[in-house]
Image (tube, rainbow, N blue to C red; front, side):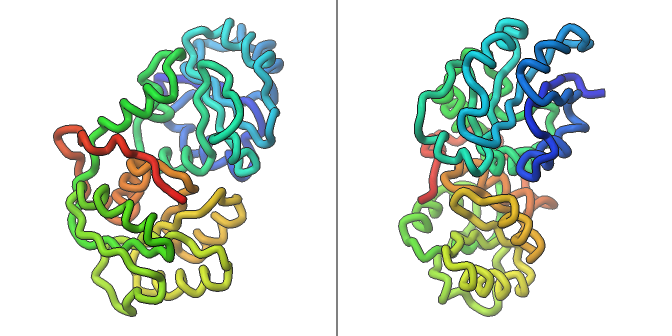
Length: 281
């Protein structure tokens, strides 16, 4: 039986959120309610207080501070997390977040659920509800990186993004080559390809089809990916999708999960250089 419990508030069957709920059902005792008010009305009937209150936010301003505060008062020890759909992507960089509430995109959280088998929701679970996002990021930078071996191809028309991934990948033990899309060889011994996706859909499909046919796992980086885009990429054979901007630790862990699951190990000590853990353009 899961030790921790969570309240999911919103539409848990929405395509952007349903995978998260499905992946966490074996790790958390989950209650789903349509609104904060409904959650508060049924709170006294729950067996245990939740460790998490998860707001599934489909549209901007769906959850107001006045809606959330009564739940925070009722469950003062619960970690409150807002999961943002692709329609709310701009809120991660703008606006005034409600104090004591962490924010994460649905795409990013889906990737983290895939990477971890722990009974916790995500890395900020170790912090009290009052922990700031900056404190969580600093702690995450001290997490051990996976130890990997082999060749990784970073394919990007933007050299800045590609070069920014050189050192983080090298820190895991990987040999890294950064190439523009036109320069990827038709045969490759690479263990993984990280593709900074072209905005042009026809070009993107052309690139991916060629590389997937090589039999090399491909991770695709996209700006604010919509559920239909992710489904199309997965149907083509893409092994992982990350929305930009992304955390470098998430990319490295995803690479370990999709391409090195049989031989990836965790390093014995935290990396002191991984504080620059966000990237993307």
